[in-house]
Image 1 (cartoon, each protein chain N blue to C red):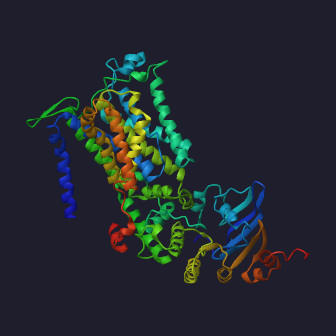
Image 2: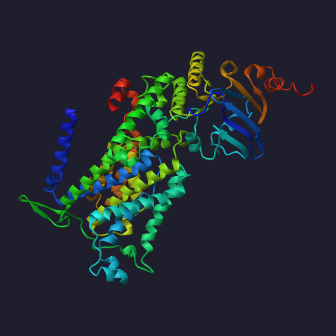
Image 3: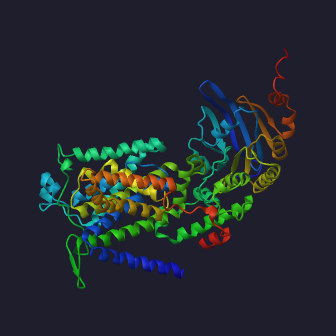
Length: 263
Length: 365
């Protein structure tokens, strides 16, 4: 990892986005420390996924400043964001459904490999070598997320929890500095959540940062080093899980109405 | 391993002997197989675009036309007869040899593929199909009308007197006497077409089983996820269009010299639809399936000719043979789509495999 632990990996400031008459995000910013798991929470419709899509280039922001590992970056094209070092998963799983689990991960290696198509036609040494590397790395990632032995299964036939894990393996294959997970625990049972938590811990131990959107408060509070809270497109709190939990604005946003005078 | 080698040898011998057997029943039969080989080449090319990258292209025949007209112009007296400047340089007409004409036509077709692909990059599914259909028609309309002010394509009359291909001093346009046998032109063309199809199959298999092939499949499966994995979908799609068009162009060159004549009529929408049908019917993205689909759909109408004749006689000539053939082809297609919706010979479904994972993958690495 080129970034040192403890330095700022991603810093985003002043992001605004308007969809027609809806101000989805107004002046939102956050700063992710290298090697941290950073939680992004908020009630439904708070703008979490929009913010996520802005950072990963899927949705262009109206304004905002972005800096990744000390370098200014503009999330204008999705594929460039992945190359720059941010990989993501999707809230509604988006695997390459008719490809095998192994091939899904091998596609993830694409951006870090380079042998061209003419070399593939001629089956050059460089090609054979790189293919072997891609396969080796992909197998290792399948093992890492706990899918060893399932590489030859078509992605669509995997169980729900396995599909979520495969999506993480595919994202890790791009060697991200920041892994962005959009509600990875959605629809998981208790056992799967424990496994997921343990997996995210191991990803952090590798020195990668994680940005986590999640509804499961227990998971977020237990796992995150830092939590940012959005409500109605605005940043309402940011700090350690303990700080955020006590924040009156956060309690109001979740329980509703407390900041308004009672009738 | 031994079994595979044996299968390979048997198929090689069978393919080599096939035209020699068929020509005994009449050269028309060999001609049917020749045409089928050209369609296989087209279907393999379209399969890169539709089967691998998932871009439904209904104007694919345009690249066949580009290749065919490239060769027609480069290897016939047409340009010299109509353009004085060229006549001054080449008084006998242009006679470009095949080893030069194929790369030129392949290059021009690839360029056409990229140019026509570029505006459609943001379109998907039905919208892409409609725009490519339009592009295909535009090329045909161009060919129909480019006879004025300068006569380039000779309009609907087409271009004739196109040179036959000659390989290593042997002209494929004349019977060749070798080792006590006489090989008619259709048989000679068969061997050339077969060799090119074999090369095409190897190219397709190798592309499919590579970093690029996986990237195409990923775009087909989910374009947004593919982008999020860092794939430059724009370049990958253009590469698919370009490579696919190259196959069409080469096939067009072979067609032009085989027929000795080209006209816009050969490149109608009907033909585009036919090639798409071959790919879909055989098994989208699966190369053996695509070959089977192309062979069946190219040969079926010819076989039906023999069925249609008696039927026509039975109805006292009221039944038009051409229409009957179309009807039977359509029925066959509907039947196949109902019974085998993923094609006649689709790619194997991985979940059906019982082989343990490490064994198969370790062997490849």
